Image (tube, rainbow, N blue to C red; front, side):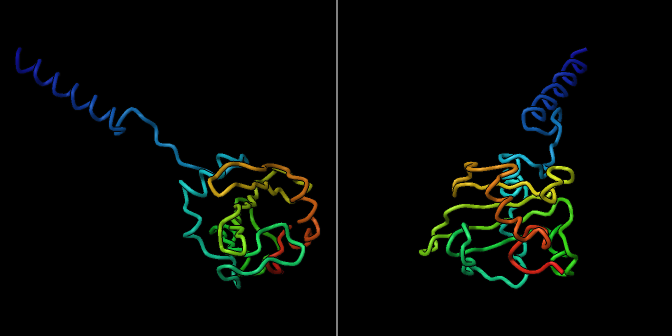
Length: 169
């Protein structure tokens, strides 16, 4: 009888240790991109380090902004693996779940903001389903969603799927 009690006790101790260490009893959650500011920031930073993504083809680190652009004086633009083949293949538009992360720098190369475009099917059909987000250097959401300023400016490039960096056709 003592052996059975010891075995049950040992199993219980192992289970509780495993539970508190996260090995059992917890459901693993996979981060997915979605059209919500905090969730998208977590996805591009904690879930998928965007700095490991490819840069927009033909750009380099700290390239100058275009005249009239509201983004930083110097830019670095990253694209996820959904967007890259469409950009390289001149597909004409980017597929759903494409993410573009633009680091906006001041002239002294101090990060000023992150601006992000995320394409989610059905999110905003009037604007090619783009979700817009702007973050402070510390990740605070400064703007998100159907941002009028973003839609208005990028709408000038409606035929290029709302992107300015290079032609998609």
